[in-house]
Length: 90
Image 1: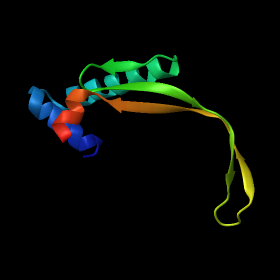
Image 2: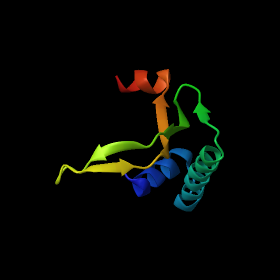
Image 3: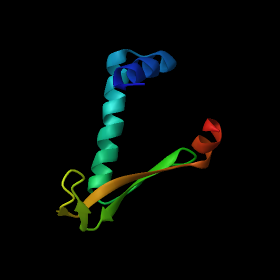
């Protein structure tokens, strides 16, 4: 499912226009992004939790040449599925 299909499904399920569903989805993703940028985490009980984790700098290898390269440190987003989501998929 892509973004436009998700917006269509949200609009149909909620009985709202696609424009309203798009605004709601963009608000949700924007607020999750803002919270994660601020170092917080977002938890939807029973569904899942997003958090930020720091990945340290490390050495890697160029697969074509085998040369050693330095991979810079960066923050990554982690998602851990909650029990409700995990149970519904199994």
